[in-house]
Length: 129
Image (cartoon, rainbow, N blue to C red; front, side):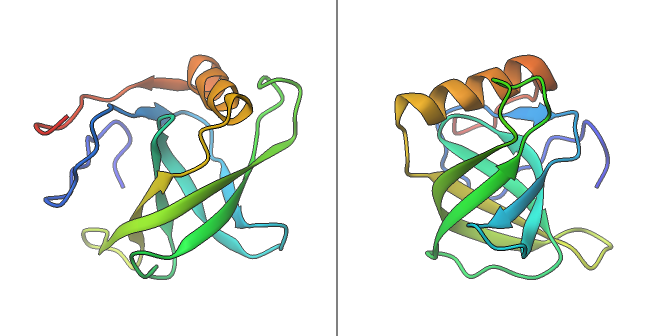
């Protein structure tokens, strides 16, 4: 993956641009220690992870993001999300996986907004959004 590269998927139907995160944030499967992937970009409606293993579309997850200290003085947040697509990263053994956030509680929205404000930078939105 190239830092700052805008990534689009031909099946991408999101309506909101995402913010690229400057920290290397690990994302775990719920309360387990199994790493699902690493956060590439995020909005209050979805996120993109870089994963070592493929993820089937349509699966529901409880994703636990380990947060940098600058976000609400919390160490982590758990977000309910559904995998929407998965594609192999160009010239690598990694997979890009798009997730739709299904938990839009005020706490999750505020945490994501603060994560973007403190640790993100703008990525150009796609042609459908």
